[in-house]
Image (cartoon, rainbow, N blue to C red; front, side, top):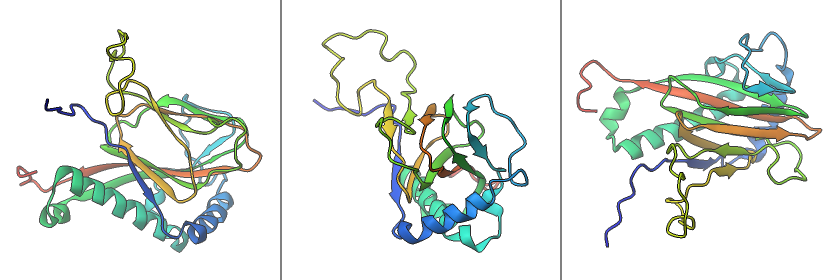
Length: 218
């Protein structure tokens, strides 16, 4: 028997090697900017409770405090693009990475319901501080949904116990300081309500890539 893995969804995980130094600095930086001056002016109906969302130009700020994080995220995403597309160095050097990026401060009761990120190919979440440990193990987790519509429309013993990557269940990931998750922007996901007394801070981004006019080799 030869098995072909059709329609796979990549979910990439990276850990910053010096999160213990970087993340506390980022935490102070972002909490100082949890103000109307930095708040995004669009209200989104997927967000509720105590959740602050910054402007979407974060990766273009010149502040030195955020540059190590920006470089880490960009290097990680570039690796994903290169390896999954099997691009060579010349092809990669011709690509332009365009970003929307912002920071979230979630306080007690904040959450974000199911959504995806249109007009981008890749999205990601970098955890600066996960907040306090939760009594409920699902509190504040990110749930990624299976994008195969109606894949589980009929369940019987022939399919109800399939193992990954063929199962039908969603996947939940827990925030950890310095951890980066990268996923396709079409993937529907939600963030469960967070009830900690300490703020939870993450950075999110969308990226779309452009190539030269003579890009038929991509």
